[in-house]
Length: 68
Image (tube, rainbow, N blue to C red; front, side, top):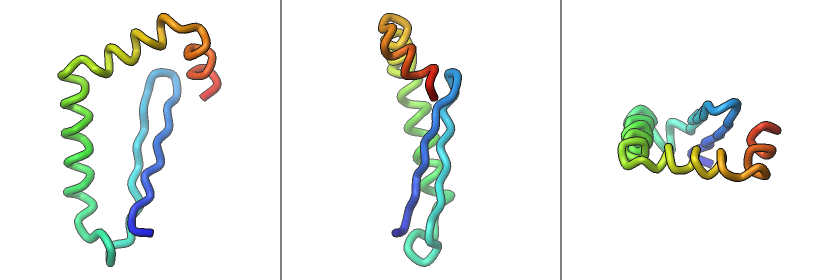
């Protein structure tokens, strides 16, 4: 397994970690940069705000997010 990418959300915060096998993925820093760029693009496109708005409108999603 060359890449493990755990993702956790808690109280409106998203945490993403990366664990790699350097023999299989020696450039994890480059990957992390691409991931950060992608999240910036999602935020700029308003998708992060739209997802939050969906959670705000849906009591079941609010309950699910509170359980995290």
